[in-house]
Length: 211
Image (cartoon, rainbow, N blue to C red; front, side):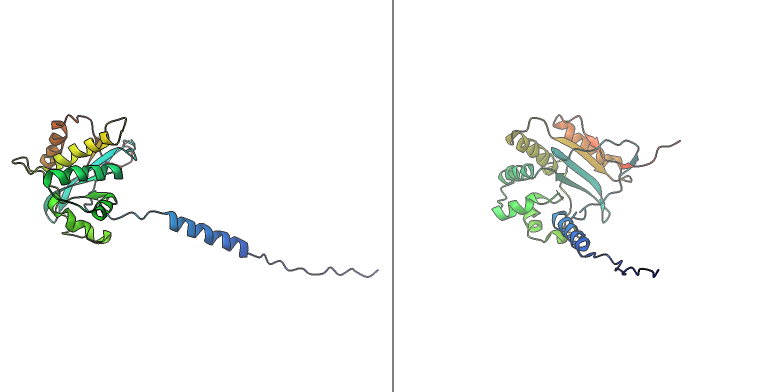
């Protein structure tokens, strides 16, 4: 009896549909991702084994470090509405007017470190140019005289938080360089404590436990 010849079928798999799905997912992630801007004052935080996560909202971060051999202080506010409210108060106090466009630009800044009089110059720059060396000189924290603008930013951020109807106080975190000298950190702590802020976080980097 003769053998029955089976017809040969192609073993190739059409990958067109899978490629389409892969490119759709890639496009979705690219379009929905938020680019992280470089930090204007990068610091090497001290190591710790504590794994307490900072809140995503209701937080003000004060960064202390050195750049170009000079001690600098920067401040960042998680909530955009708090940023705008604090800016409005600072504008009134220091008599530095800001346009609606400048206020919108300021609401997009995660962190900044310039005297209020130089803020308009920074807002006129592109985002990538704001973090270049020499662009931001730090927020004044003079303990002598009336030029302690960090104190005012903290005070007005808290007022803006109340104006926004928040049901709890703003939280504060100090992010200092591991090699930063203690007096500058102490100065920031004193500013917080002068405003009855006695509870705040210290930002550290995670390290393994010692055995």
